[in-house]
Image 1 (cartoon, rainbow, N blue to C red):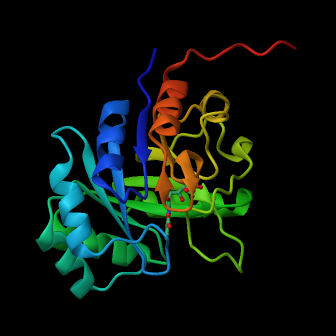
Image 2 (cartoon, helix red, strand yellow; image 1 turned 180 degrees about the vertical axis):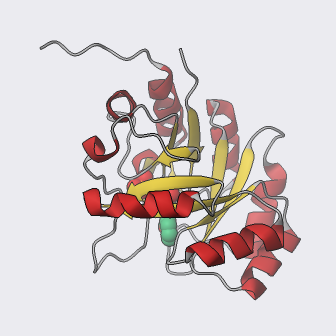
Length: 220
Ligand SMILES: O=C(O)c1ccccc1NCC(=O)[C@H](O)[C@H](O)COP(=O)(O)O
């Protein structure tokens, strides 16, 4: 059985970090976006990243961040990856990758077939691609909305870089999403929360366990 690498995004407390580490997830995501209920100050994020055990990859999520913001974040805490969740161009992705020497994961919103060209385009600049649901025009946040997309659009796709499936995943649907898409990495935020920004240790454990469960063949 292939081990699926799980990212739990939007952690806000040391207890969240402990729950993610205990669950066996591979990545812990920290959000820097002031409008988000999951936003962290640099001091808060520093405390959480220092609490993460060796082996749990620490990912800083930013949205169209300028160099000053990225300098402040990367200088203040140990990080393993930057997640770019805004409208960063491929050139900007490459620039950030070179400037900070950290692997960069670019989020690409998908709603229909036409959005898949961007996955290929960003594969040339980023280390990984987060294939996420495209937020609606009036969405409050560019991500973390608990919104899924039609997984058949990315079923069995192969791209130049490793990719991660995101958007509306839950402990209840993640096994089916993996079965349908053959994703080897998955990302969740809202689906393991009690309310926006409040993570639930039991849901985190259930989510990771669901990714480990053998796929159940569907009866025709
Ligand atoms: O989580 C946020 O508040 C957030 C704010 C700004 C940009 C992105 C944000 N979250 C992205 C994620 O948490 C995930 O990478 C992904 O979009 C899945 O979220 P969800 O559908 O809630 O599981």
